[in-house]
Length: 504
Image 1 (cartoon, rainbow, N blue to C red):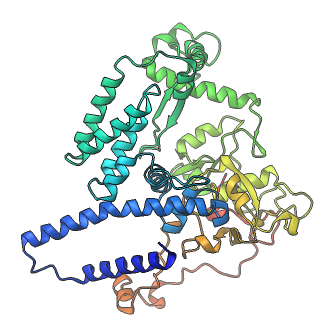
Image 2 (tube, rainbow, N blue to C red; image 1 turned 60 degrees about the vertical axis):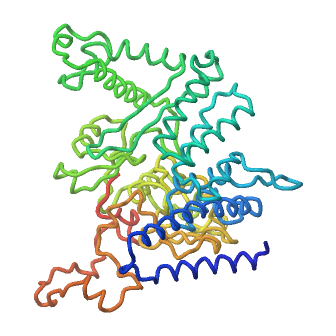
Image 3 (cartoon, one colour; image 1 turned 45 degrees about the vertical axis):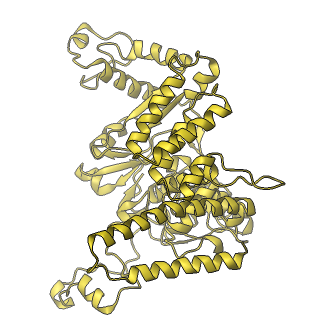
């Protein structure tokens, strides 16, 4: 099929959807409604198969770098405004269900050929595909190719008749029958399974951590727990917790923590000892330390939160308590600082003071959609150093390594910093008019009055914006606009003040 034929077909689909959307449904009978819904469901199940083929072909025609992105996930998430998780799911399914493109010769069948055929005919839905994909991925390595293919075919046959829950249960039972005893443990299998997973913060601030440790890793923490998780050790309830030596008998008797709680407190103590040792080296130009940004008002009122360079939200009481340990950074950047934050052309790399100021201002990678926290970021020059850029704090921004390297005036991403906001302008292939600023690390920036969308009519605007009192009724509360005597303003020593009196 030529490009013109495909475009005509897509245009026909768009016109058909418009026609369906314009149909009146109020007078339809129950059988007519059910028949239309059944047809739409089948069509919805078939369309992903077409998308898989197009994605597979696109990946052979170009690269993410030629599209102006660092990965295919970024191409999909930026162009279609979907999450990176959804982009990853679509790419994974395309890799398994689209015809494989060899270097030479005709296309090869999909990895999951039976699943691809069933999806192309609308016989299974996205949930069935997900169950089959995960089940095939769980097959033991010793299972031969013929058995793997038969396993997939059997699951597809079941998926045509049952729902995802029944299919998942059937797949689990078949996997159990294939490998009831499991393979003998070996070094490669242990290495494959090792890992530590951290969940997102809960509303109460706690974080779930799950781990599969190798024998060596557990031997290390076993010895640490034997010392620091013993009764009476590292007890945060003690006025003076025992972190070295032997706890007193009174400390042991007064320790009412569970073993799990003692091991948690031992983790905190061991991490704090490692940070205070000064032997962890440097991370992106700063000693490995806990860096927290907050506001001066929260510090003074002892209410509110602080945010670490990794994005963890801490109650202000924890921030104040942690500040008592001297090896953490908690330098308040309210108004001006005594550090030299403008280096102009005297050096290319940012100073530690500048990095801390950028952590306070940006919180993490400034490219829209990027979730990398400040700990994993480099310092990006708005105007490249090689092209005459200055190493001044108001001309710098945080960016993770891949995003920092994606900036290129010749067809790549470009940046522009205005009043502390870092705008990322996409290359033409990814520019769909999307947002230019990353609010992931600074959600508080979205709490201001919303801007009116361009598509709103005058009547819609009146409905969304009720009448406001006249200026004479509001009172004179506007701050003066010509007060340039305060330190920390642009052009004054110390550079610009962090937003909203932020501190780091």
